[in-house]
Image (cartoon, rainbow, N blue to C red; front, top):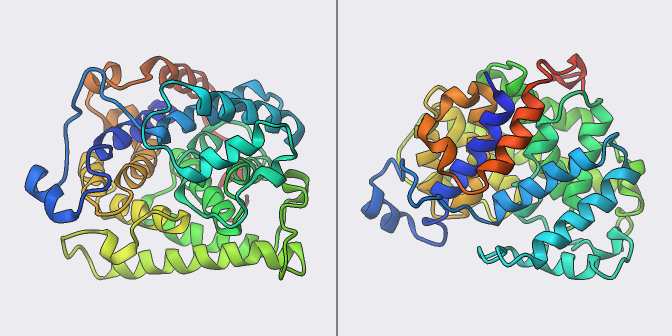
Length: 343
């Protein structure tokens, strides 16, 4: 079913569809595309944003870091982010948090000193999908890598927790988890992980004024994410009222709201991936990030069959997407420790 490819391409497709609607209000989007939002790629290639660029940086760093440890992952990920920051293609309205952090990473300081420790922007989790897709990881590797890749730029505990939740959502869906079970599984994961600080991966990132222990630091992030997931559950219980999803689950500029609104758009129509992408792109908030996350979820569940075949060669960076997807799709089913309640 090419689930790794489906998720990677789905993220890029959502990014491309959300690119022209970001920074527009809902009425303007509906006037241009209708209430269902954009449904067709435009351009040849169809251009993406920094979301896909940074996702590819994470994915390629994971490949280079084999075997995956904190010591192998951090230096190659740092260099991948610095290469992205210096690239002439980095002209897609990149996030200031990422740019500031990369500026500080460039002088070789410990990454914990470069991280923007008060930021929980969605840049922490819009790029984490490859960590969820990489086959054969232990629970600690998947959680630790998800949080480390977030922490290099966004040091807020909620950015770390939201990134881990995003990675696990992708992993569980690609492993065959029914969409109806996704939200309860993520909510339970918040409770299970609430007091677990992964010091081997994060070092002393937790240390800051007013935070007495690592557990106190990380629990705040899990609590904010749990509250956001509860908002999604409430919105889904009320059905689909139409209109701007951001009014129900948040504008998506911060990590937990990007996750929440993407989950909401995906879970409304999990068997209609193009509907989910259009709805996610027709949002008044961070449309490209919301849509790329929704596309990652839909593609993980349904594989490449979710998407029009003609899109595969039309999307920007198709060669890099194909290389990662083909490599990971060859591995087949993931180990059981990544399923809900066991990771």
